[in-house]
Image 1: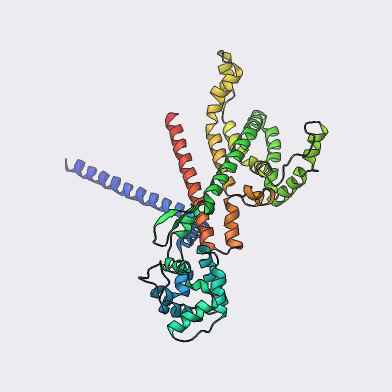
Image 2 (image 1 turned 90 degrees about the vertical axis):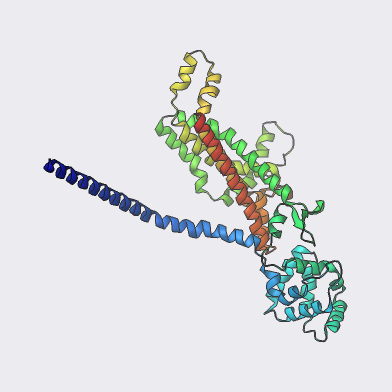
Length: 417
């Protein structure tokens, strides 16, 4: 009896030791797998997450005024924004401007205030060039008012007081046509200043049109490729992938040549008698959509083709043999099985479309520019990084919302299936 008990104890110890050994081996396997992914995670951190975090941070950062005018900001605390400030604020302003290291700092301050109040740039730079200004606060106030009477207007001082914090929601609010008034209350911008809502809507409209045309052109082409033997399909797929090997600028330049009044498209249409005079296909919405569809079409075809290759052709033949009309069998049997490819291709094309800049800038008119154009403008021309980052944050939010909708639709399809 004792020998049986001891044998069972040994077996229990062996089982426990085996479980520990397996657990340690599994842990080592997981750590080795994690170690292999560390370079990729570091790469994504440095090239994706850090820039996105910096973009979001810069969209709410507001360092120009508080860094350049610390004494002025302090003197305006408790100030009634409906009346001009006290002489001490004028003296603090002159002292702050005199402590700026060079004119580039004054230029950054002037640009920031000018984004709040038109004309502030010339006011600040004119005052900066007139330094030094000495005397009592009352004398400095009189000198500034003599230099530029606009210093008596509360509007410019309100802009300074409004930006007295290092962090501000103003850029994000402006990107959706909202603003803070002099009392800090959020309100809609005046109708003549509301621009980004219409621009964002235009961006979605163009992206939707491009997605619809890509689907209409890409679906039958992908279906045809999927029905061919593998050798022929691979050969023709090379033609689909050719645009990936050509610069976007080259393709846009080619479309400019093709779509101009004396271009190949208009000449061909006039030659076959479809039109009597050249169509306006350049520097308008039509040219933008045509070029974007051409560039983004492969991104629709590839997801569709990968899904269609896995749909057995016997399903449609079986439906026809059971009495269904061929067209009805195609739409009721074949098309539903390609929904994952349709949703993936549509999402990919739409997300790529909303971030387009070069094609609308070169082929579109003033009313065809998308949100990315204004991001580039605020970055390179206006040098307003806060506004550029806020608009970029809007695009990022739109992309994340679209992706979340896609995930929900995908989960719903899987649950139904």
